[in-house]
Picture 1: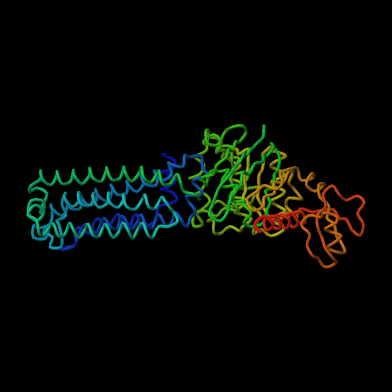
Picture 2: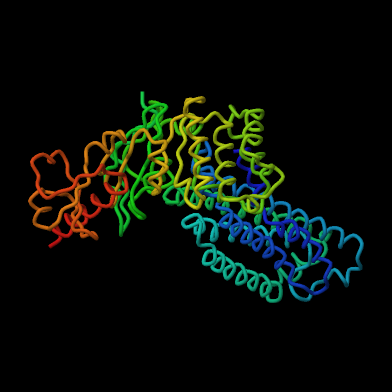
Length: 218
Length: 286
């Protein structure tokens, strides 16, 4: 598995993957729906899948001495790694913003502040993306557009839901909003819930993807 | 023990069926898989390598492919019509990703092949000619000690000189390294030069699997003045040609009149067997 992951990182990662990772700095932009940062992570997966197809990577990998079911798993593990990096980066950037910026600049008029809850929301978004995109993609690895568009529609609907929640529910607009040092316990719970949802959805996505890929004719 | 044994390989698509393909590749033999475009050559090779979900059994040097997939894949070198993968990557990057999968990878042997094939590792795949791509695929396959080479139309798109060079390399590999080879092609002149055995596939069915010489001796090419003469002689796959009619004769050439007999070539055997097969299918559907 480690060899496959190394091969993925050497040959299949699109350069934009690293550019989009740096988009965590968007938390410094005032009044911006920060959940969109996680969409860029999804976009980099799309580019990498395009690159995989143009390189004939899946056919090449299937001729290597590996089990067929390991191929989607390796690709998804790499993506999970990148998703963890973007979540961590957003968390760190948000903490830096909270530590060094005045509180009035920390307050976000377009959505939730760049705090731990944002990372939890991002985890839910990425978990949903994994569940919607990968099983469809590994059913027909040559058809990337439909799985991606489907998953992006779901992602943006969910971003809309998070923005609405921030304005219409006191839980989101006061308790879970604002700097991390306020209501820290509640924010940590929201973060933990997000991470658990991400983990569960990603595991389900892995199992479905492996099952679908076994039936693929290359 | 055969290098490769294929038994009852079957794959059903809505518009095409690979129908119980069975044949073998003896050790240190070069076996040509021939057939027209769309006959099922690539499907057969994909079925052998389990790139598609096909029924039937495949064993390599006595090991069942499904039961011992890892061990079997270590023994196989696959060359899929040149090297069509990772056009933007350098050969070095591909080798670095490829080699760790093979514990038997021999770097000095790889470098020897690079030197012999005049390949420059710093080049990108897209910068290689078609002939060089085939050589790179061969270098990768042979450097992990593959004992069975499976190649899908490796000479397609190569000029005559490159094809000649490719055939020389394959012959050398069989004689000096003891590898066994299965390669699909529709360029029959390559087979005449190097193949020991022929597997002839038409519309998903294996029509012949035998030594090349046996196939060539089995048939004679006959030219007839009239269609009645050809029919009377029970010629196979009769078709109109410039000077009359032409068909294959099989073990029935004695006592025939008004007929000119030639030695059959793979091309002529393919053409007439295809025609006979098509006529049989039309007759069955009518």
